[in-house]
Image 1: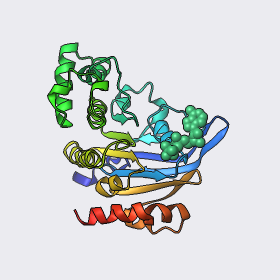
Image 2: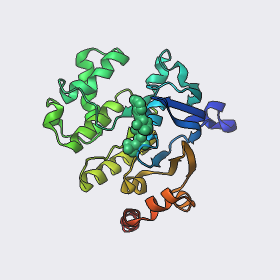
Image 3: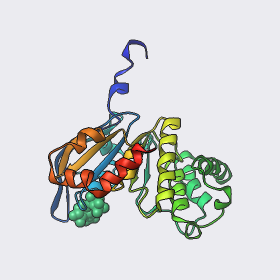
Image 4: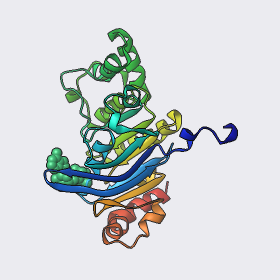
Length: 263
Ligand SMILES: Nc1ncnc2c1ncn2[C@@H]1O[C@H](COP(=O)(O)OP(=O)(O)OP(=O)(O)O)[C@@H](O)[C@H]1O
């Protein structure tokens, strides 16, 4: 861009400063800072109960922080409720897909388009079919209900719904949890393809080391209520921390690394 572009183009996609979250009398995050760069896939890892999902829910505006600031593309998420433009700029895939069981797959994806983009039902369903095709879902799945699909198909449908409003930032909570290794690897490839094609920034919570190696540009480690480190997998896995060492250099970490090296 000429003259280095405007200032908002150089801001991180997500910027978190001094975040404090409290739930049920417990402090989950205490002075947490994080930057997610535009166009990157950032993987958030951390021990069970370290606050990864709570962080994701806070970043998308579902939980209100006790203290601190969160900006998405330079816009404060305190105003997410009022800033419809910002709400439409983010897409979320929750851990269990969170599709409406009483709606068909096409209807699930069309819903956001009717509610937030003001499309008619027919227009929304046409566009929903395009979004479903984008995620590689068999068109025959469109008229079916979530309970009639495999776990991998539900994840793809949920991804289509998360992408329905053409977000710039995509949040994914454990997208490959519960998938068999082949479906998980296919989902990882899909994520990278879509990131490249749609120029997405992706914030990904995962335990899945194969997913980290296959998709992430950088990794952030959540520990001791803060982001302990952010960097490439190589940088982060070298950190002198017991959890980091056990996670990246334990048996599963070695297996994931060797799978990636053999690709
Ligand atoms: N709605 C809630 N009310 C009270 N406490 C909560 C709530 N949601 C989460 N917590 C607590 O916040 C802490 C962090 O939970 P969170 O789900 O973010 O962990 P996580 O890192 O995603 O864990 P896992 O990897 O096991 O999914 C836990 O102690 C959890 O019990």
